[in-house]
Image 1 (cartoon, one colour):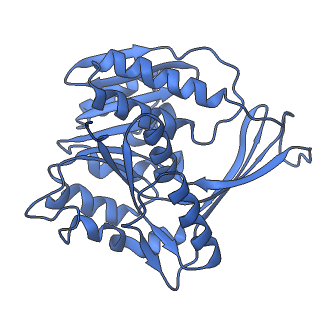
Image 2: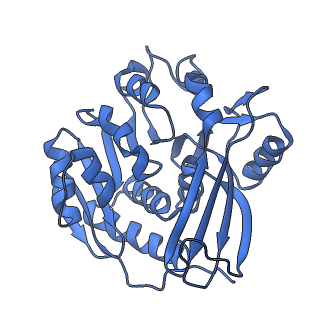
Length: 297
């Protein structure tokens, strides 16, 4: 039996604390709902979605040795993640993310990924010390990067020979961190996964749709760009041209992790062999199932 393709997921793995309500909300709203805590972070969300899509995820991140970190490591392991290469810090607390979602979407969120930022290139040691690769024998598989890494570290990765042979998939953690992806404009193997707002920030322009945004990113040096736009058409531009497809129309019950789910499903679909249109169709269907999934309130 052929083993599942491996994907290295580099970035934030933390506790997601999510408050959801079936009510429409605004600033100052105080409504009933549900509060959950579960393993999250961009790298973790990508890894979970990748595992559901048939890939074997390996996490490279920083997790503290505090009680929250021990609990998080155990929870991720139970979910089938390979946590054997995680950097464990004695003096950095485990990171957290907190969000509030209403019937009208994401109301507010705060990402506390300071420990990941402080750990810096320590999380990359397995890719430079020969464990998973090195500058002389670079890892040649699939790597998903998230924008919670610092800009200097992302610059180093973009220029590092240890990453030169990998197929890189890069996503910002949020619009506020989109410009951290600039070092990958011009990278020979990197695909940028962004939404329409993030594409605009990277190009310092406004776009009418995802197709225009994806083509603009390629014109600015991206080897490939995949741009989503909520319920409107998503687009994939690169050497194959441009593919644009509408996502299935569904009732949205959750939004946190939707972009990460789309990205992982798209990577898994391409690893299985479909053409760009087939990969986009599968990724959009997977993301639609995720955002409309069971979310009892």
